[in-house]
Amino acid sequence: MLSVQTPIIPKVAALIRRHPGTISLGQGVVYYGPPPQAIQRLSTFFADPENHKYRPVHGIPALVEALAAKLGRENGIVVDSRREVVVTAGANLAFVNALLAVTDPGDEVILQTPYYFNHEMAVVMAGCRPVPVDTDSHYQLRPEAILQAITPKTRAVVTISPNNPSGAVYGESLLREVNAICRSHGLYHISDEAYEYFTYGSARHFSPGSIEEGVDYTISLFSFSKSYGFASWRVGYMVIPAHLFESVEKIQDTLLICAPVISQYAALGALEAGREYCLSHLAVLARVRERVLEELDRIRDICTVPAAEGAFYVLLRVDTDLEPMDLVERLVLEFGVAVIPGTTFGLTEGCYLRVSYGALTEETVLKGMRRLVKGLRAIVTRG
Ligand SMILES: Cc1ncc(COP(=O)(O)O)c(C=O)c1O
Image (cartoon, rainbow, N blue to C red):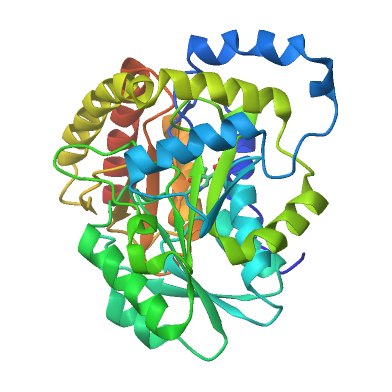
């Protein structure tokens, strides 16, 4: 475990606690909670005393069925005898399930840099080697670089779209290219779609699981945490090729047994509200995002802000030689605003900062952004 990186978010949180009044643009959560339908469903959980016992490892039948219908309707993922849906305690556990199912210790897993730190940590914990591949200057996939990173030990390629931490949304043709590379090299394509509903402007989400030829090697991960304001309820799900079902059941039975059943009932209620629930909040986030980008326009001379058309993150490259964590610390101590350093996401060259605008009210985000702009201007100019 000593070789596994320590997540930085708790460190930044400790810094914030020591400096009350700091506005945190650090946390990757949404500002809203679950829809009322989710809470109403809880009475049906309590109505059946059997619900206090263990339930099926892969999820309660009603939820699995409702998810299969959603996947077909919204993602173009047909759940037939060639695939299975497994309800998990969030997309993070779904990732661990997938990883343990397809790798042996010593294998390699290709991640895109910037990567989601928990993915990198999980790969190391599984005794495998993360192989980071750089994205381009817009944080877009580079299929030719992925191709070059493949070795006889490679087992899987991971993509996240919309992306944490960059906010990039990968286009359909790039995702199809990566999926085809996986097919021709006998690899799994693990596609994390926790932010599937969070796209802005003309960006469109594409699910690689909808590629007909990819059924046997594409693993798709989804989450209720962001879409339905469900972070603490711990519900996510994965779509896997049928041949992995037995392995995933063994893994999940050992790590979890089953996702919290009360939360699975709540998830059924959330699905009744449907994606419209998330989209109604997305209108607010889209406005906040515009304001964030407007604020950042004022410091374009000292930082680069690639297009961020998804999730609720912007990843800035700051034109400075300062260490990212030192910059983060000074922003908290001197300017009362917290962001996450890019080093956490595998960005070791250059000074990157992730700004998250999903968790607070528009007014507070704006106040935080003004502090950030003022702080960066002062620190970068003064040194
Ligand atoms: C890309 C990505 N995947 C998975 C997760 C975790 O989701 P869950 O709460 O469903 O485990 C996050 C949370 O920030 C994320 O950014």
